[in-house]
Image (cartoon, rainbow over all chains, first blue to last red):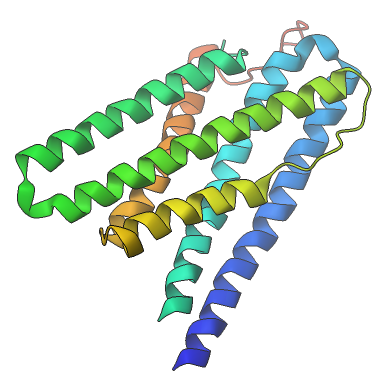
Length: 73
Length: 136
């Protein structure tokens, strides 16, 4: 039973972190590119990036907590 | 149009503090559900810390990009994940609060951000960055 808990934790956090990594990379790369092209739009781009990353990162944080619980079982 | 990150953070903090006050009210009014409201309170505090850290990192990366420098550190996901894990550990293991309520508290600040983002988009009529007059 313990091995299944570890396996569940690995799958949950691994897939969550994979999606968040791709999403964060896309958001921050486009933000940095946009700020480099137009520094005067920094405020708007930072705000949009913050909203996007805040939403993208909610899922892996929840999956981390779930993985922590699965691992303890 | 909301293009000021500190103003957005102030609004997110205000909404999360509202959630916290609701949790405190529930803790007092319904003592039978203390574990649920306690877990929600700890999770909401953790999510607020995560949101502040994310805003700080976003500003740092924006400063580095506008200055033409390469950001030396990463985006700090590991620190935020550790903060959330610490909140869950304190809530579930040390104080023995409810786990689903803690997870619900951990998404309080992202939900506030989503709400403000949707409201901001609706108020500006869709595209939030068409400042150069490129209206279609």
